[in-house]
Length: 588
Image (tube, rainbow, N blue to C red; front, side):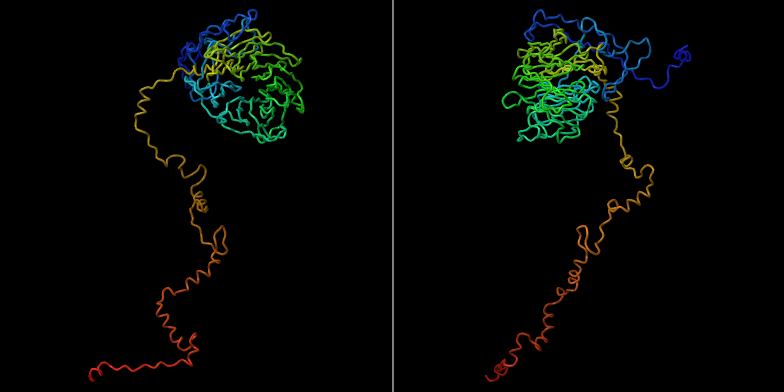
């Protein structure tokens, strides 16, 4: 007999606290279902010949009934939650994990049946990426802002948890997460790349070079606008940046004062300079690729001295056009480029002379429009812009072997950046109206855009909640808090008080008078001692000046200093006798 049957016979339902369950709506994904999941359009957005037109496969199958009860998710928890544990064979199977190695049916199935719109940018989304775990989305825009989105922490409003301006009023050109997901790079229209940690806190701003130096190898950093960046696939401390100053520079994360190596891209045009529009590492890190506005495509061996490229193709794309992206395939043998000349080209590194396949007629409005490989390396995804103002954009799915159109997916406006995450099997697209469209399938995708919907609607306020709000506030005695406690754990109060008594700062002891020579900016008593003593002995201010002069009268008469010369010849005054008044009256 099974353990659960024994417990049931004994009347024991279970041990411990039961996990709180929430009843979720089985049709919660239906409101995000796309009306049109992919029809090969005959509009002017993409001109495809009739023989190339391949009927689009059916959309993802109908949404299966998910499990009725799922563990309640904590809205404050960041990141994807652990998968729910199954209780038995009677439960419906959970979400299937996406495995690119599984055999697919003849009709390709893409995770595009449902969509989640992230609205917060006000202008075109020019940079887009996701962290390796698929929990966060990082976006940059022409509204000068970078935004971090977290699927596990978002609710039904789908707002970013952090927004900031990395470089003031400069466009954001590229953003990239490191392979360990702990930091990311932001490249804007300035000359300095910035490094941030996972939560968007700035770690470093790399130096800019001296713009008055002609030789680019002698400058410590870039001297012109940055265009793109890429992390080393195996070394999380190394990355590269490309710039309009005709260089690709290799940097070390720990040294922001100077780059490790400079790759000077030389052009055959007059002046021997060009603009490097994009750069990338090969999957094994042995090659660095770069594309330029003069139409050339270069490859450098990372073990070389970078004096000249190992492989070069002149005129890979139209001269003067900006190549939006350069991507290596998983096997490292194929390179995919998305040019500003309305083409997608596939190159083989083993015969690096001419493209294997070319797809033209892909309208391009924004130079940062990119193209990517699918996780199984069988398809290519890129965006085609709308040809009319306010028209629909197109997300195009093509076979890698032939570049035949498999699916043409209409979106609200021009798609600029596309990112297909292999772990969660979801496609994130940045649009020209500032929206980020997350395409997914409830049965093919894992977590990601499904997490905000798994939380269910917000809980309504109950009577208990309202009663707590109107109740009297809790009064806390300040000195009862831990921060005001006198004693520390494992230490007596008496010893602490004696030690603080010896500390003049904590005991607030006044400064003692200085004895001997002065120190610490204070003058000692010896320097002023004679002055103080003289001030104490002088009592003239307390005496009567008349009496003080009369004391010297006898000495002046006996020994005059100034009138001693007249003592011998000074005549004696003779005065007439004055008669008294009484005698005069009698004579009359």
